[in-house]
Image 1 (cartoon, rainbow, N blue to C red):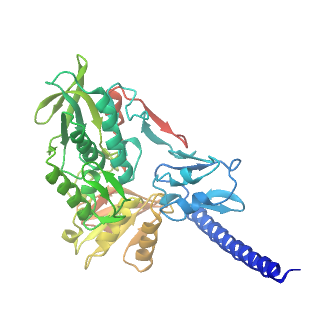
Image 2 (spheres, rainbow, N blue to C red; image 1 turned 135 degrees about the vertical axis):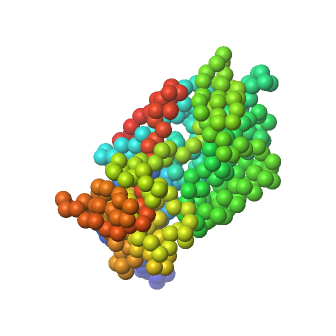
Amino acid sequence: MDPYLIVFLALVGSVVLVAGSRISARERRARAQYTNMVRAGATEPVSLHPALDPNRCISIGACATACPEGEVIGIVDGRPELINPQKCIGHSACAAACPVDAITLVFGSATRGVDIPHVMPSFETNAENIFIAGELGGMGLIRNAVTQGRQAMDSIAEKRSDDPSISDVFIVGAGPAGIAATLQAEARGLRYIVVDQYDIGGTVLSYPRQKLVMTQPMDIPIYGKYTQREATKEELLELWKGIVARTGVSINTHERLASIERSNGHFEITTTKDTYLARNVLLAIGRRGTPRKLGVPGEDSAKVTYKLIEPEQYRGNNHLVVGGGDSAIEAALALSSQPDTQVTLSYRKRSFSRAKVDNVTRITKAIDSGHVEILWESAVKTIGEKSVAIEIDGDSREIANNYVFVFAGGELPTAFLRSLGIDVETKFGQK
């Protein structure tokens, strides 16, 4: 045999062996992560996520390597599996990378439904001339919200008002989707009005100081490309406020929406400060709506709050944090970093099944080191002036307490949406 051919075949064999060992190592790692996920009960995705069709999948792993969040999908025993579902935040890169269309992006799961308003590809709801963009429609990623705000405004531009006394669009919310929509309205020459009951920034305003906000490069109308992949709360707020100031777009902050009524082919919108007329309405508000309460005696006390902005002001006290999601974990960590501060975390389940992996890792270290006490499968029964009664495994325990922070999620403004004629569907692993 030709000696050159022998060398060539040897090299090819070596490459195949190396590639095979890498694939095997990747599969072993995926199997270990999948096993740990099941053991921890962390099997529920927290946002839009991929549903995998094993009958179509050819197991080449393109979906796994395409995900910007790391190893969310893995090949386990020759089948595609979600191995880190909490890390998925709806990028959709996996679906785009799959060559055989084996991935569909869905909301909810077979065991946990998610309420989603009916929204068409144009971002118009089933209620004519009412549009939804961003988090309210189920998208949790800032880049997605910005993209949707821009695209929704492009659709609205096709339905502008012929009457110069009526605005083309009334935008509710000045978070990422609302700001992007406002900028696109300015770029398209639309007559617009924007209100937000708080300030510029949306949901980010309620984050603790210096919280790291995960984002991705995004195209912001008028401003251009934003290339950072990570930013703190303060950096992101500075970005939005800087863009608003530089472009001169008008946003009415600290003005709350009161009602929306149809009148002669347009909308009459009442706020806490004025009444407006508009041809279209864009809802760019969050999903949290009204914070979900515990419904226990003492919850109306001034010591109970539903957000944490400045943990420094709570130093030197005994705190109870209620909840097991990202907001609760981040609040517990922020409080526990303060000197002479005691933090107890009460959660009704046995594992952090709905929190991001990084947060679970951080809170686990805090618990193991004694910085945070965890009360699994517990429920607050009463909130007193200087203590809190908590039920654990049928027994009641009373702990010293100065402040209670409740992060039990929020009530989707379903009643409000339905009052506008918008259909809301509970999705169980559906598009």
